[in-house]
Image (cartoon, rainbow, N blue to C red; front, side):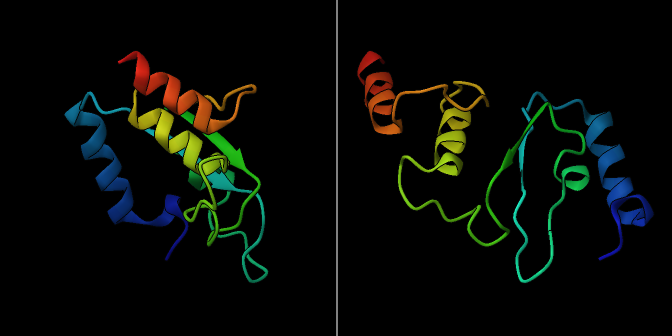
Length: 105
């Protein structure tokens, strides 16, 4: 795949997305560890057109495979899905905040 600035197809898709003015939030994450000697999604490509982005100390394979509810990729996805925002929690384990939120509904 070509770098994002030289890929006409991706540029046209981004332009169409922006013109559509969807009310869909775009939260992004990118890895900081290399996968097989390569940083697959770097900060530039992992943050393009995002409202908020987070650097995760993961590689391209394990960023999408959380090991538990306490794993940051899981916490961030869950919080975005529940409308809690994209910020990582300052403290408090994921299970406690998840069950507290569900009970409060």
